[in-house]
Structures are given as structure tokens and as C-alpha cells.
Length: 297
Image 1 (cartoon, helix red, strand yellow):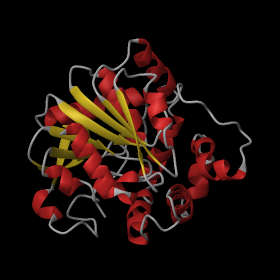
Image 2 (cartoon, rainbow, N blue to C red):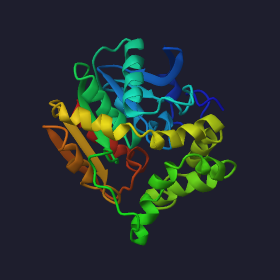
Image 3 (cartoon, one colour):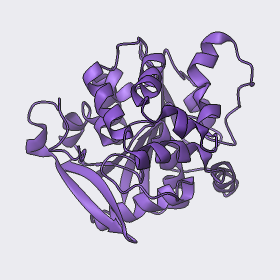
Image 4 (cartoon, rainbow, N blue to C red):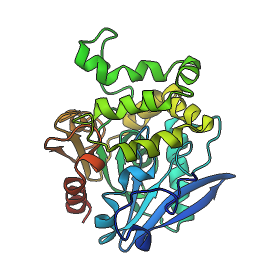
């Protein structure tokens, strides 16, 4: 399955009438995005272990107000999956080049999980291009407090993947051929309830990760050790001055997202999605769409 807009199942009614897949060449790297709608440009950045499909339930409402660009960063979905280049600055540079290739000089950004880290890097490293930033459900490496190695059981269930994902190669060998076990556990344990992300959606994500290059990339995001130093350097250069929306799920990160963003931005509005776990665009799509439209509108 190529994972472009015409290849994935269970899209909202009329989705392919609004959205199309586009590919932009960035220094020989093919980067994929699903685009559609009218209005100011809004870049949507995906969560780990997902790709643009994680935004599908929110995109139709956003497209009524914005030109939506739901991107696949390198290593995921329908974008190329090189062996290297997964540090935060490179990922942000890719996305800046993608938006240039699509004809958008200035744009707003919404990033979830991994997309929050890339979104901050994009706003901090390309300050003349990002107009507003919304982030959800992640930490900022080097700035967020790190949990202890030995955590109480509930927290361990939620966070143990951080250490596992950073292993050199044994994680790939253990997960290969068992992708549905490992990644299925991530969706079941991080959502508000184990079945909040429906099985048909989990299968799409797992199928994408059965590609060895995609599986490798999924761990490279965590192995890239430069990210914390890069974020620290951007933070030292001064806080973001653009408006920032920081969202957490009531049954996941909650107010912690706003707390860390206030370390790097001067104008932060914190919000919490009632009853939601980690996957806000799928667990609370109407709340997410309404909140983003209110912030970016």
C-alpha cells in the first residue's frame, strides 16, 4: 500500500473530492503531503507512530477555512525513508522546503507528538515563515523533565517506549514481524481506552510500519541524539513571539504541554481535551477541529 490519499481506507465521506496527494522533491528526497481547502496555509505534522492519516478526521473541517497541508515527514507514510537524517533540525528543514515547493512562503503549523517537536523546531528555526503554532501531546527533549528509570507501573506502561526506541538495533530485530504487537500496544495503552483508535485505523498504521525502512525510521526519530542540543540552542536564542496553542489530553499529558511550551514561547494558551488520551485528532476530532479553527481563524 503506497499510503497516498487514494490508497488508504476508511476516509470521511467526500474526502478525496477535497484532498489530493502531492510530492515535492527536496534535495533528491521525495516528500509527500495531502493538500486541499481554501484560505491561509496550515501545515499539519504527524505523530509517532503515524503519518498524515492521523489527521483525516479533522482535515475536512479545517479545509473550510484553510489550505491544509497534511505532511509526511521523512521516514513515514508515502515520503521517502532514507537511513539517516532524523534529527530535529533536518526534519524541520525538510518541512520548510516542502512548503516552499508547494508555494507557501508563510504558514501556520499544527503538530501532534513528534509533530510538536518538529513544529517547534520549524517555528524557532524559521521564524520569518511561521505565523502561529499549535502543538499537542509531546515533550521537548532537553527541556521537559525526564521520568526515572524505575517508574510506578501505570507510568511505566505509558512511557517505557522512550528507552526501548533509543536502542541501537535490537528493537528493530525484536519488532520486525511482530509490528502489530508492539505498535498495537502503543495505540491501546496511550489512548483513553484500549479501543479508542479503531482496529481498522491501527491496521493502516501497522501496515505502514511493516516496511523495514519505515520501521528503521520509527526508531531513528528517538535515536537521533542531536535533538536536545538543537532545541536548547533555539530556546537560548529567545522565546517564540508568535501565538502558541498547547493542547493536552485530560487522560494523557494534560497541562504539561503548556508548561513546557512556556519555557520557549512568550504567548502560550493552554487547553485540555476533556476525556481524551494521547491521540487528540482521532479521539476528539470535533474538539480538535473547533479548537484549531478558533486559534488559527
